[in-house]
Image (spheres, rainbow, N blue to C red):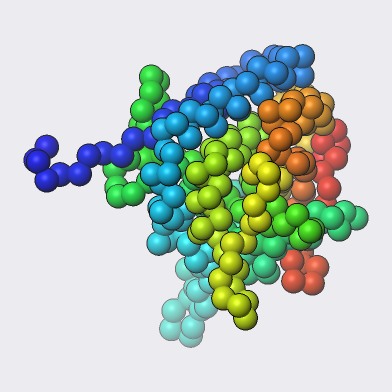
Length: 310
């Protein structure tokens, strides 16, 4: 490396990211045992959550406050899905295979962006406005960042961990909402919950929340102001969006779905977590033909998840 070459930025491989990767590597049977341990001893996860906030704050401090949480490619929202190619007299339209789950999920994200938010049938308090897409809480200045810590995954942390949707609650608290969208039959809602908790942990660190307020603003006649208010402690909601899932009661995975309400209660009963997480909600996105969302006013329509049935 030359004397003029910039040093590679490093990001701490905090404990909750380590736990997420550990659980991600478990079999379904092993995850069923893991969820039992969370219900019986939620204080262990709470300690990991709290410790991770402290680890990130100690390493980042105010050093990343001036770094945007989005790249150039994502700051203006998701790109529109490709339009079908129309046939002409001279050239027929090319045949296209069925959409992948990833493509369908992207279309849902784009629909939320285009509509400006979500609303939940029968639960008006859960209505939320769109704020951001592919938000990267571990993004650093420059290119080539890497995790620092034993067993850390390779790759830029800013690319490895991105929040599907950042929303804002429409109530008087106007809290940031971590929105994770999972599509398809192979969804593990508890892994999605653990991922969302990791995002709260890395954004609730004081300097990180300052960064969040700096880069997400609203504009009115008085100019720009932070979208999210300051509170005594940074606080978030978590929305777990699910689409394209068909329940298979015979699958081992169904035990993970059944356990979600108990896991949520156990997690929110821990002071270290409830200090920073107001609520955790499951939202089902009903889909029409070709995985099209339904709209209700200027919002994508969702329904409250019934984890033991949906």
